[in-house]
Amino acid sequence: MKSFKLEGIVIKRRNIGEADRIITVFTKSLGKVQIKAKGVRKISSKRSGHIELLNHCVLSLHQASLMPILTEVQSFENYSLLKSDLKRIGSAFHICELVDGLCAENQANEEIFELLSTTLKKLSSAEILSNVIYEFEIEILKLLGFYKHTENLKINTKVLIEEILERKLKTRPILYQFSS
Image (cartoon, rainbow, N blue to C red; front, side, top):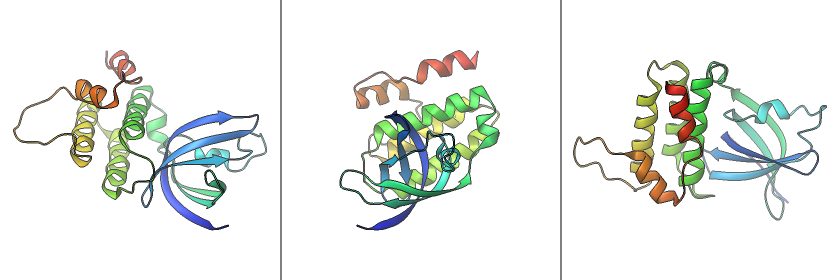
């Protein structure tokens, strides 16, 4: 069995069993990947703090038959300024929902990784969060080929994205509650 390392940003997590968690990470080299993190919900786990949502980290993995298993992890950036503000973290969760929903698994896209990383940095310091979100939505739609920018028209990205996903966005209503 082989071991390997990936650099990525944690965009989703789901608890399984008593102490395990499945995390979804958007990586530079493999795109969106699901990883099993055994025992990270135990109090004694030293890895749990490194695999929180939005953390940019390097993951050491062991390839198992179904999905890679996390063996070690080291955080680069945890976006603490972003996580300390409810409006900013709500916006970041919306960005993560878009990346998770629009990007296919195991398809490398370094441009989207850079867009995600840059947008999270912008969200940490931006004055008007809605502008950062709109720019991200337009750019990810362009990079994935869902939108061809021809004129300087402002489109309703919410409707377009929900048509692509064939479901309502979960985080979008929360953004409107925070913006007032």
